[in-house]
Length: 113
Length: 116
Image (tube, rainbow over all chains, first blue to last red; front, side, top):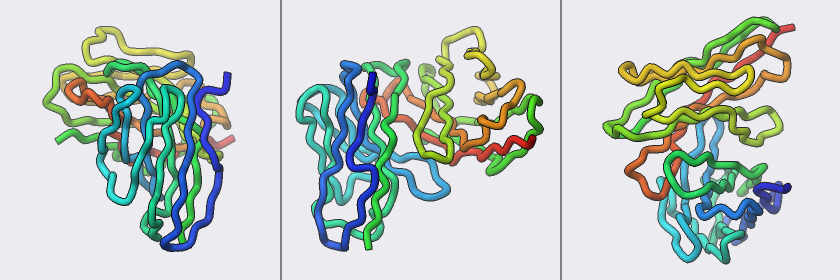
């Protein structure tokens, strides 16, 4: 059982380049999330999708867009990368409801030069 | 404002001893969930334990237990019989009920080092 998978694992971009981070889950979860983790900090929510067909902004959405392609897949796009977006990006999924545990992917390390 | 505070940036514990990692939270909600995650040096986030605000019993999962004191708004993680593999960052997180998106609010983490 793969759980939550993310691609790529590591990426180097130049300022102004674009890229899409891919995330897929095989647990049939309704909700999916994108977080970023900066050094010495906990995770902060970028965007989330409570169910297929819906997306909403989280705490730090500027500079990002998302697409909930289907129930399994939730992608994060950086249209014009900036050095401030250097971070580790985590995708997570869960069933709906506040008691439900979120399960995380392995993360994508992004370096923007 | 919703907030999680972990006041111990780093801690050391001797192998086979127990250790408590502190977590306090701030919320005006009556319904919420509290979670602990482990992040080893490899980087993945591993779910450890969950406590619901209405749960009367403290949660336990193997060597992990959660010392939940609702009136004090604290949810400390207790690891019994520490092992070298427990060396990692530990994050406390809260999921408020009111937020239908279900986002987790994370603390800044505690780095635990287990000494042989």
